[in-house]
Length: 165
Image 1 (cartoon, rainbow, N blue to C red):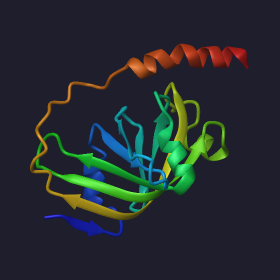
Image 2 (tube, rainbow, N blue to C red; image 1 turned 30 degrees about the vertical axis):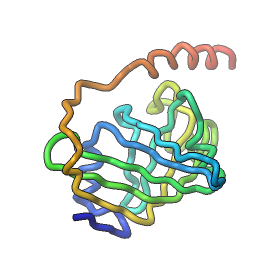
Image 3 (cartoon, rainbow, N blue to C red; image 1 turned 135 degrees about the horizontal axis):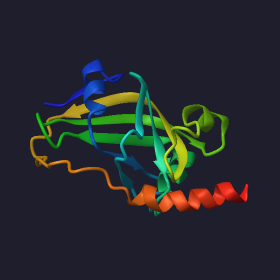
Image 4 (cartoon, rainbow, N blue to C red; image 1 turned 180 degrees about the vertical axis):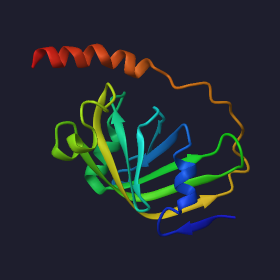
């Protein structure tokens, strides 16, 4: 049975930080716009500040819809689900703020020593509601590892940028 909370319960924070991937959903205000759902999962990219605030490191990719939608209206939902162990789904509903590469907020949260190749922004989410549901229909999957392709292709581009400075 689903439950709703005004903040992230401590036991859910512990569970969230163990998940290997999450999904980010945003949408524009226009009626002819579409909902964008982006899978995320590079190890160490998701962070919990406290029970009402989380952030993740946004990496380069094929599109930039999440940032465009957040600039328009700030609405964001982050979903986690269990692929192993007990079934569970958790949704974090919030207002997102974009801190792009080079801004003071970005630099404070992601100093050069910890940022990932291809890093382009921090997405900070002020959580106003948390929903959990059973996840009984979510299948089991075995986690085999994180893909390295994005990091591997971003390193040479990052080196070129650094050399051009």
